[in-house]
Length: 497
Image (cartoon, rainbow, N blue to C red; front, side):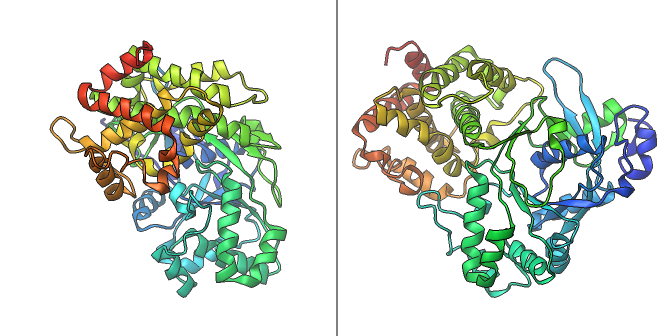
């Protein structure tokens, strides 16, 4: 667009003529929150909520972003050029783009350049919260045993090089040690990752690490730091070149890394903060005594529903979530899974109408402006399936309830792995266990090892010992191999299987 201008603090007054921008004085903000893992989700979620309350008050709650990984260099460079500013693009179904500039990130530190500077920032007296979006794998725990993975090479590096760590554990230990030695208060470590009991997991893994890395810190952390559980939700796709171009075409703004997201947003937090928190409730955050029912609902319906659509849609030839769920065949599959298998074992959730929540999921998945890629949904499934799907399946097996739709998700995952790279299935498997799960899926095609895929204990535990499950699985995987996903879903939803 002719006359386009770059997003930065100097240009905000011009940008404000066409788009909402921060109306608070960013120069007066204090950094009360340090956030590790500034990706698209953080910027559509916590940073958005914080920007909302900064318009009312809360000048003590500016955010300092931290990038721990080498790949975070790009985000560091862009945010520095843009003075921490970025555009949030809310994509509403069948409506025009709604965009605004977010200003809550006032600093950004690229940790590999200067680890000591990160320690000092985390230990600064005005910092009251360290929040995290480091992905499920970043917590370094074995989901099968619940234990800390000491064998990780980066963990071993951190133990031997405490002043130049590579992981979140090494950084947190040094920062908390600094706070303790300075006689400062503890703080709140707030996980915003998609893990059940994320605060509990964070506490357990960090304190386990502390026992070996800095044992004299153990009691101080347990006594003076809090780790509230939280449940987060907002569909936030990967930013594309088309998104950047659309923003420029529509508003005449050059933003090197804007964020797109759906209108829906939710954050439920256990109200357990050591030394204060922003008044996020003014922006719609829900503070509760127990987050578990809400996260169980979200993980088993939304996240497992995503996996259902991801595998099935990919096998059918679709590329995005919206085109998959707008196919009546797959919408029916999704509704049967949610209604017949998930809902009966969810229990009551205070303040939530489950039927309305499920209706909203179908509407959200079908948002044609989001274009959430199935490749993203299918990635890292070896981490996702044990958390999102298997609890529902195990509970239904325990009570003798229906399992066919949940089992089909596992069968489609196996078939997805079998076909990766074959003619007509030009996609790459993105998973930390790629080699192991692909090898096992291919081996399961042989008559002498049909349970090879299900015997990956780190994913499935002892599920392969259930005769009822394996019999259901065999029937589904054979139908998938012989007749394809469309046939199997139609047959199953018509209750002919």
